[in-house]
Image 1 (tube, rainbow, N blue to C red):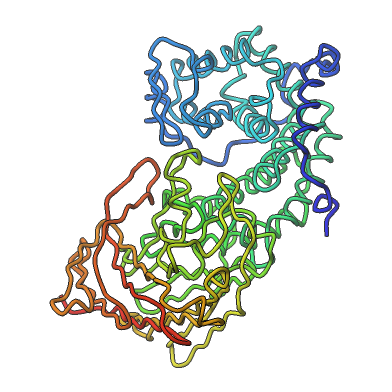
Image 2 (image 1 turned 30 degrees about the vertical axis):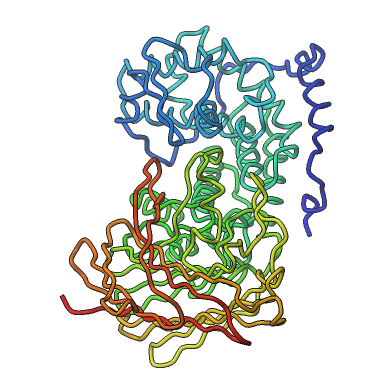
Length: 550
């Protein structure tokens, strides 16, 4: 266990006391020091910007985290933010790369004007604006756009920006470990590495940043390469940060730690693991599809060509690719630290074929404060079985997963190209005395997917007559119609491909669903529902999804 893993989170009382200290005149004086006249290194930003986004920003449209704020003649630094994600994106300054991509004097002047306005409003400590992960992201953004921002800039602006960078770096050195655990602390550590590499007299900060980064890699990157969040989007973002750190170290001619290179080498295959046949990401634990071109670029810059594993037991997923069909199944992690965040989607699966999604989970809003966040974290928003309309995992309001259920050891068997996956969990033992076991089979051609869901009772007095619902959420581009005998449904994709779903062990109906798989978009969709009531020692739902000729 790393030293960081033993360290408790900063308490609310401790944070309040720290805020009082950081706002004091004495503390502000302690942030003073050598005034840098230039960056000692100018690492390139490995990630391209979007000129169209720069055009929106130039016109005063600030579009982040599912929210549009239009301020044609007003500074964005004085408005009430629509949500936390929008606020973090603004103060993180990632959008500077969009101005750099647009290029030209006008884009440069506007970007500098926004930075100058920020310096006028937020150059002194604020508990939110100077929060370690936000500050770390800002540090990365300013330094990686150092040439664009500072070269040939007006001397007063250049001096103010460099002085602010130095002051923020000194604060981050002291507070990096106060950052919430998980990806935020890794971002803070990456920002500290950037400041140590790019600002004069930064050797101590660089050493400290690399030490915290090493601790966070040990804590967050699981042995199979998955991120502890089990969220494919967070996984992607962390991998991008690690790659950016490697670029930064190369720019200042500092050796990359072995832990950094090894983490990138493990995470890249797992990013491939989570990609569907349409090249976007699977929708587990708060993820959205993401941009396939961005995923391609990340994998290219990872310089790791290893193929995805079939099993990711530490992270808690299985992957089956036969023919043109791909299955991704959430089986539950083996390490309880991977339960701290996420959704109640145990034993849910997603299926795609020939570049089209068929069975999906509902996704999640970008803004974690949205009214949709909690409902879409529920078991019912996933393609799995719900018992008594309860969640299979305890969900804490706004704080992720509570007590994790026991997950049985998963089994994977293969023969002649055919694959069987079996896994179970005990999330319904309280209060229903039921376990859920799911068996999935995909034939070697990828055209025949079969499943069996078994609800087994450990106490008939508690489980008898309890309602169950097996849900199969359909992608919005899939149309469905019930079969005449009410035992299944016919599915048609946008390309015209046909699939037939049939089930036994419950009543089959079609119901409305919702899909938030694309950032900023909410689409209506449908779900196949197989429902009934538990009876006897075992209740079985058998189903098959098979491809049919055009």
